Amino acid sequence: MLNAKLRNPWIVAVLLVGATIPAYSAPAKKADFLSACLPCHGLDGIGRDAEIPNLAGQNEAYLLNQLRAFHQGRRPHKEMLYISRKMTDEDMRALAAYYASLPPR
Image (cartoon, rainbow, N blue to C red; front, side, top):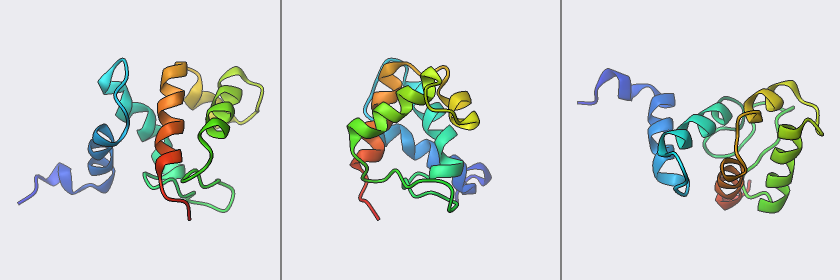
């Protein structure tokens, strides 16, 4: 029987993330950054609202450029600026690669 904590779909999703994003500098950071994306973009990269874009299957270079623009404040969006502010370029590359690798819908 699953531990009660593992029955929570968000906890399971965050645990699964560690196996799906390519390894980079700090393994604990993998789940941290993707977990910030989950409420809006989901583990599957599909926006949870009409105002939220689908990221699954998007061009990796496009996703990376958008993350950099949010990070640098060149593309204004309060939540994305907040989420991206502490990301390294390596973090942004890993996220772009992850969402680009998903099947588009």
